[in-house]
Image (tube, rainbow, N blue to C red; front, side):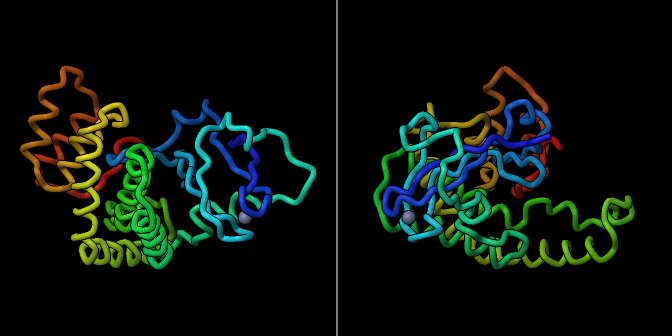
Amino acid sequence: MLKFDSYYFQCPNCQAWLEGRNLKSELVNEAVLYSDGKILYDNYIVTRQKMVMCPSCAHNFWVEDPAEPLITWEKPDAPVYSWNTWRFFGINFSNNKGKLALIGHYQRFLKKHVYDPKREIYLRRLLWWAYNDLHRNFHYIRLKYFLNGFMSYGVWSSYRRMLLEGEKLFFKNLKDFTANLNRLLILLEKHPEEQIDLEVPEIYRELRQFDKTKALLEKSSARTHFTNEILRHSKWKDSRVFMVTG
Ligand SMILES: [Zn+2]
């Protein structure tokens, strides 16, 4: 079964065709949700990549609304750059070097231009997730994930090494991580229509302002598994991103 719907669009600078993919909507429920709102399916990020760097001419452009005339669902009768050649700007994500390169891309985009609030929120949210990727799934360092038989010893120990190194890199970048979240908070509080689920209380938790998280969540009447988990981690004074469901 195909898990993705393909769409096609053209670089406005060199007219090269690129293939984009959307996860089929019926599969979204089977995805893994993290506390920062990032959703993964089979290790693929579900959120659309709206900032594109053309694999042919390196021009940066936005692909936002799937209804734009630029975008078509039919495969064009021309050579097409596959999704893998441009998504995440062609970065190899399976090591920390690639993860740092992704952070660098978002930082550069943010420094280069002044964006409208909607676009700045989008870029800062992805930058936030990119920092968290350095130590996402940190629970896997525990021996039980090897003993459970999910992974061979070799796979588990190299994954563990990458996460431990990633955590060090995360703390090395803590100042920039914090500056990004502080700016994102200001934007989201000014534009509540752009907020996703529980991201504001979660940002306070990741900034280690646990009392603020608690106050915000206790105000809301709807208690969900997600709310309870954020509260539980706040009580432990744990500010690391965690897996909510998966
Ligand atoms: Zn191009």
